[in-house]
Image 1 (cartoon, rainbow, N blue to C red):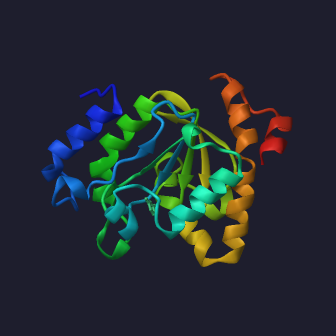
Image 2 (tube, rainbow, N blue to C red):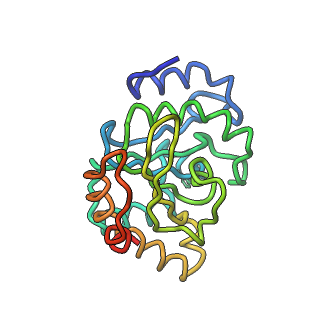
Length: 207
Ligand code: URA
């Protein structure tokens, strides 16, 4: 099925909630939020306790850090859409299982197709692995990647997960530093055409 707007997509997911792992009732589902025509889409892992209570992504401690760093890096709420690879809180906030990621894949893919973001920012290793399966966050964070995905070229910027930033000062410093480059990266991505390769200068400026 092809979806053309987010409200229909969300309604469909809630209507078919019984087909999804971890979901006992439609209100367990925490949808993505933000501007449907956002230039930047951020993809996290899965909601935690506060997200499941407030029914919004990234509103707990790591969400507060993320939203603060986004604002400080000059991004307006209207420029971003925030979502997760798994839309329901896993028990005890454990890592999402491969079958859970797979179950919600169609829905996340449809969100990407509707929003058509210029830039996808992955938060942590699970969402990064969707586009860049062979790498480690510690080696590629803050570096812009050009990937082929569903027959289209996407720009993907892998970042540390904010929860990891809360656990270690060194990671938090890198997280803040990476986000500080994002305006420059968006400006470059917005003017980049499909076939354009990175020039060394752009690369230098972006890395
Ligand atoms: N961590 C995530 O990955 N997503 C959320 O929505 C909240 C915390």
